[in-house]
Length: 230
Image (cartoon, rainbow, N blue to C red; front, top):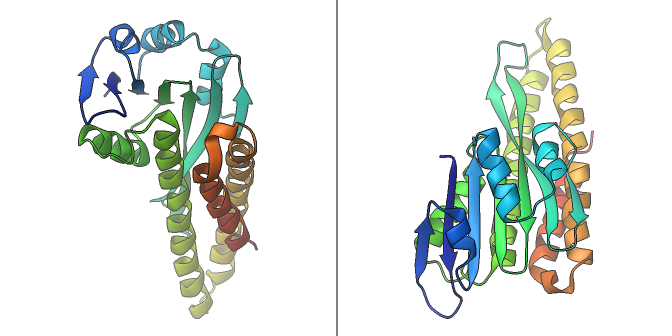
């Protein structure tokens, strides 16, 4: 997938899909543009249509920590997803982090990522299926995406705890190295989660339109931070 768009109105269940994002942006109601694995020229076109600052697009690609920034016509949220993937190490798992950029306007949302992100894909499919809880505006979509990304943090914690239990039960010579590797991944995980908490917390404190929905996500990310203590 590269760049696609859908448009909907909270007055009915109609969802239209578009390949031309400029046409989608001109439609009444709310438009969501989803770009993953897009080319530089495609990203430039998205930024031009929605008047997105090019440095924000670069932040997604340059490993910048999670954050939230306010612009005149939109809010930029950079959040990251995390998963443990098999690696040829004693720990056998490495933390794989992928950034997601969310640009939130009054009646539009642009989500940018270098790879397909499961949490984004699930919300996209739910929107195409006409799920009413999503088709209420861009803020509801952002909430569902952030909620899915934060849920992924708990999956990582569960996997790390499983590995911790196994190395504690194992008294072989490699146990100490395994524990050190687990601690290293926990430190990396905390460095990811804390700025994510700050970014989502800013959404909850900032725009009054955000209200309790995003506050719930902020509380969830705070719990994740507490659970990742070492």
